[in-house]
Amino acid sequence: MGMEEETLAADGSAHYRLRCGPEHEGGPGVAHGGWISGVFVEIVGHLAVQMEQLAVTGALSVTYRKPVPINRPLTARAWLAGKDGGKWTVEGSIHLASSGTELAHATALLVEREMSHYTRAREWLGREEAGSDGTA
Ligand SMILES: CCCCCCCCCCCCCC(=O)SCCNC(=O)CCNC(=O)[C@H](O)C(C)(C)COP(=O)(O)OP(=O)(O)OC[C@H]1O[C@@H](n2cnc3c(N)ncnc32)[C@H](O)[C@@H]1OP(=O)(O)O
Picture 1: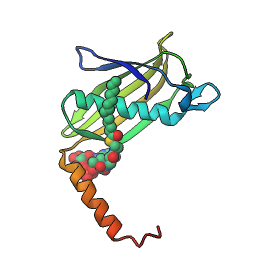
Picture 2: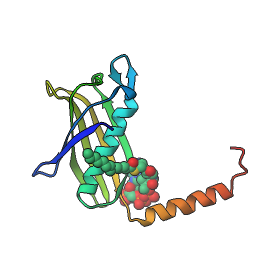
Picture 3: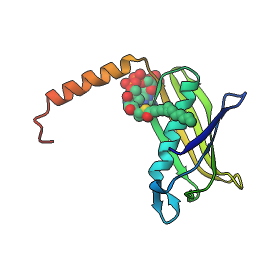
Picture 4: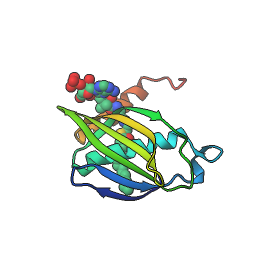
């Protein structure tokens, strides 16, 4: 996703240097919105990894404030905004490195899981496909 460096701050927030390459161009000189969302999924998810907790993204809301330029140094941050049992609210932002201006902001709901999540997912897929006649 164009991540070049990650640092963890003492307050637990994660800070990144990154850049959007031309392969993710969504309009002349600017990033595709899917790349921006993908960066957020990665950085909010990685915050849980850093805290040694397996969690999946249940919901992600992105506000695209300004076009994100390709081929320019960017910075990003992710931080824990709240926790309610096994549900985490994690926020993220992407900034133009030269000015610090916020270009996009995200709020994500992460849901804690055990590794059995993936076994159940495979079992669920098996049931779905067994019930399908293949014409869907
Ligand atoms: C440079 C370094 C870079 C490093 C990069 C490394 C990358 C590493 C990082 C990469 C990271 C990649 C990460 C990825 O890409 S994860 C991939 C994308 N996400 C998924 O595939 C998840 C698919 N969805 C599910 O599996 C289920 O729907 C989940 C598990 C999310 C919930 O299933 P379920 O509902 O059966 O779970 P529960 O019954 O235990 O519910 C628990 C609680 O959560 C509440 N709830 C659930 N969903 C929502 C919702 N949408 N809004 C509001 N609330 C919601 C729910 O009401 C309940 O609340 P409460 O009743 O307890 O109050």
